[in-house]
Length: 114
Length: 257
Image 1 (cartoon, chains in turn purple, brown):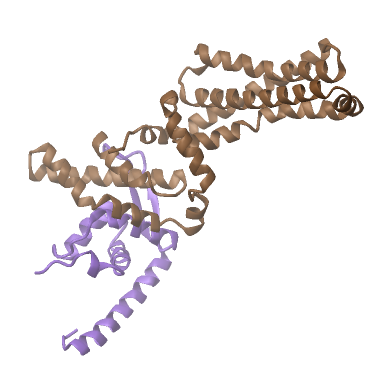
Image 2: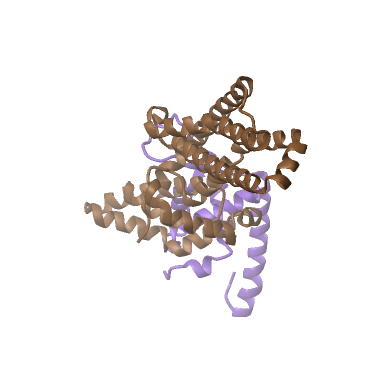
């Protein structure tokens, strides 16, 4: 399968993040692993680009981040765990609808099946 | 770990955002790199190659800096914009960095601190201005009848103001950055200077305007004022040191090149 790189992903990354956060709270690296798994290895994302997307989502109130508690046994720097907010859930539903419409319209023009 | 910190700092340092936001970016990127390294180590025992691959996975630093900058709210970007005057001060601070290697602050932060430190000696200058006001006829008389002494008094005030500014700023920086600042001989010398400043101001003023020596009460008051100044600056220095502790390890990294 041909990889989907940053240019094609642009504009969709935030919706993808919202989508994987619906599966449960996660920190940045875990979000990335979920995206990779869901994309079956086809998503070719520069990993650092995830964080600006997360910060934008948080500033819009679509996700909420909290620092991992100090009780964890893991060594190393602190991680921030993100949670989907109700507003983020609604935005995800909207994004799904918009994308479905996009596929229907553009797919119809290109002659591809949705 | 240090190599990763330098890499993260190269990405985050140029971002114009509040220090707390930048600290968060640093911590998250560092945590990510550590997790990526663990994965790469499992795939390949070569430590150096694993480090390099973990960094490559994060993406091109300049592009990431730009993306992080775009995630900062516009109001914050505007507040942290590099304006011409602070920019010039920053360049001056960078040039003078050789004599302040022990300071954990960035040049820009030092500049802001320096400006802030100047506020406290103004209490001292206020007492000077107040006294001039109280003795207005004498001051006016002096201006017209003894212009040379009047100029000398103003020059003296100017020297005292800049002296206060420099001493107080360096005292605060030293208290904020040195662990046992108050044991340092240099810091004690600054402290003695700060205590003496109000007394010097009053002596200068009374000698020039009223042509009389300062009374014991006036000198006592000026030393109390100096002690209050000193105590407040120790508190400010300690507070800055405490607030800056999480940032210090990042700010001291040499990311050039």
